[in-house]
Length: 80
Image (cartoon, helix red, strand yellow):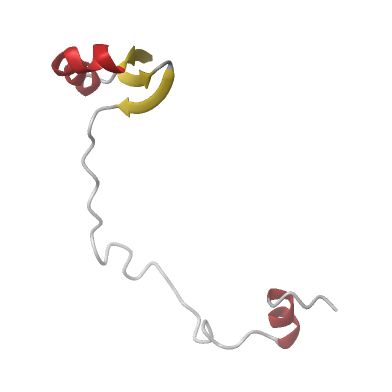
């Protein structure tokens, strides 16, 4: 659920708005009736674990071989 506030109201009640956003609310901040910013809860990025898919991925030996001439021509925009 979104809550729309003008900039002045957001400045005067910022601490309470941050608490609301941290609890899951979405606060839209507007200036002269035009939405400019969104205040939402901060979520930590999930760190990727290197090697997690080891043994599950297969790449063909000819993966980086040149394309057939007709397919390369299509990529180059030559459709004749």
